[in-house]
Length: 256
Image: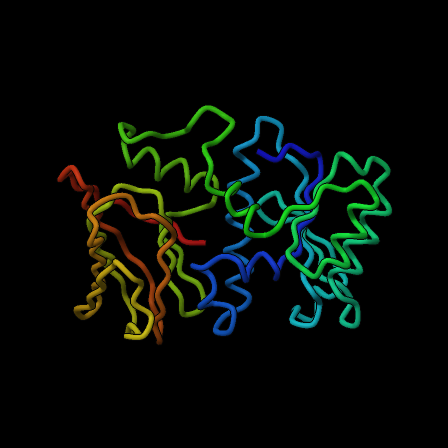
């Protein structure tokens, strides 16, 4: 496990390496960035001494009010570069400002020129592909939940951390992976329609009026976040979860 004090990440470079977020890159870039920050926030919390994570996004696609700005989201610091400046340039400038080069790591899979410059400065470099392995390893902290933990309590903990099981944002629904779920029924309100071309592999999705049912064909842990798209207005009312052991949980889900 990486244990530097500061991790600097080329945001779009890492986004392109995450397979379950690739469909969002062209369709909804803002939501893709949000999902990346959620994953990094989770990763940060697996450390007994959380590192400072700083993500750099090229300013070309930044909302106007965020260009050349710094802010925090999920405990992760975010920087959008000036519109005419590449993320690599900002990364090199940040490295130069850090006096203890050996205590930081840079995550990027860009051309060898920037990685070579970083290594000559004594900076640890990690490819985006290798860093993804860090995102799915076991936590360094005591595990908050296990297969024997009540799912309602697990949901409550996640909601308390503002990371709900179900998230709806600008035409996309995201369901967090890592749960032993056979099926999920979402009861909503509003006028909406699922888009057929967004059905995830291994998951069957049905819509009947204002009810959406997702069936996990493997009847095991959802291996990753499930993303699917809809058009119209969808407001989630409640959620019914069928676990692989046959138990059923009905829960209200807070959305953010």
